[in-house]
Length: 287
Image (cartoon, rainbow, N blue to C red; front, side, top):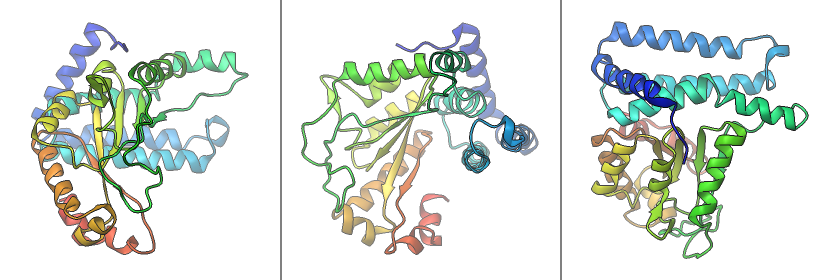
């Protein structure tokens, strides 16, 4: 099981999470913290090319993603949308450990020493199983009523080894539907609970997120669903099944009530490119 950075570290970030939730509504305090973080992220990407780990364009893309996450978190703070577990995971794991320190640098140094200076990946994507409760048209993973899956010990070992050997703290969970995957009594929520100093992003169709599961996600804080949509109701239901869009909207409302940090997963095609960037979609899911 992955361990956190000690009692002092835990206490510090618990206090920061409480302070952020309490003071986040005060614009001067919030903006000062956000501005400092933004300057640091921009400075990292603007270094001379000789000092960068990746090509300049890649570093700029990574900075843009980091800034988007930062601005999203700042807005959530301003509107007090996030619970304390989510705030703690954002501050300690996603921001401090992943975006600023980019994982455990000592583990990365050990990896470089063993592998001729090569740097390990910054994150790991895991597909624990192909089973899914939907049968979406054109599913890239050919998911559905499949029994193919990794057992718990394998998935847990993948996370632990990436944590220890690569210094990873960020994991992407794909599928199949991650919430369908189980081995005995353990599934994706138990995996996040077993590795509290890691942050997990899971791509989910959202239809299995009921009130009880939303509460568990709110209590965890380090497992963030990205809900998959194709646009509004007609286009989403045409690909994913009748009634799915309304179930996704209901899941988003539940996650919001529980203070969960979540987002959307959208694939742009020639059929939906204009719709997914429309005011209608943005007003419903962003505002």
